[in-house]
Image (cartoon, rainbow, N blue to C red):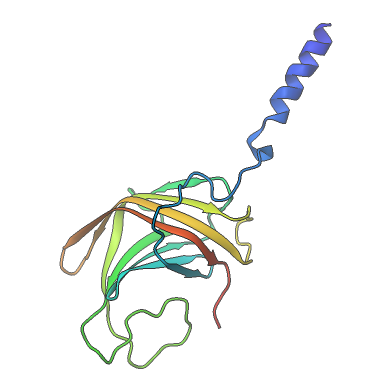
Length: 176
């Protein structure tokens, strides 16, 4: 009888491991009432226009960070070279191109953006499939950034975003 109790307890413990729990995408991020259009590419860059002259960009080195359906949280305080958030404001020249996301063409009239880099905040990521580090395949991500503080190192100006959600964005392919 004691053998049966031990075997049953062992079976229950092993059968409930996290790796066997089926998680549905997107995990842990609620779809907002209004979804802002976002784009993405590579392994991994997502961007969202705040207005016609500014955009906020999240870059994650998916070769070093394992992405899964299960929600993963990153804290930007203290710095993590595998994750960066930038806020870009276009210059004011009408004959220049300021945003060239996911394009490997260098245009001769590329303008210079005013750049703010995140130094604090949280990033939550869920992928449409469980990926191995460095795996190159097409997939979708949903990313939520919260309490993000960004600073322009040239002017010392700061900007704060309480929350931005990149909903169900295709990434994983490389342009060219």
